[in-house]
Length: 287
Image (cartoon, rainbow, N blue to C red; front, side):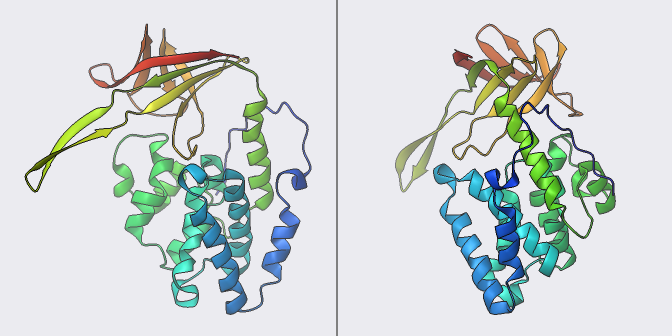
């Protein structure tokens, strides 16, 4: 399958791979693995690191390194099976899932595809958990639940080849990082109202407050705009939006009737006939 990727404008020269991650070192670590015992120890180390640095402690540089490591491992040994490695075999899909860049998820999808072909990942999880977020980037229906898998893979533009092209992961990651090098003109912050709910527990009334969603609207000096959801682990990445009408924006390449409308003091996520959620302005930074 031919894979197409949208590459962001590069404002910096090609960097030495070693400046981001020592891929030669990671490759040698995999090449040294000689038996199930050494492989299990290797996977357990990555599994433990992955689980240790989650939530507010999430380390995205380490997550990226793990993605490279598991890609090398999967290319050489296939998807780790539970019968061979026990519970740490889940490190394959965990590392893939904890990567927060969709472009890298598409390139490294053979990790998940091989897991599915080896019956380590069932079809329900494949559709609803592993590939849904790639489908939802473009569509907002539920056809992903029933369409033939071949068609689903094509729509999501994922790599289903046998091997993962490590060099493509590295080059694409560099182009993603280059977005940070583009000067920011402004960042406005928008938050929905907190939701308060009251429950009865053993006759007592318990009130819980659920924090509203927060988004950033980022405008770059090159005229492009991005919307980014604010998360505890900083796992959300800015998504480019295009102006479809005055003060109305839709995620680039998304085929949906939903869009964001900006009016003084509010950002409204809506369709032409229905308001889905409102967000209040809570601040703006220049440059």
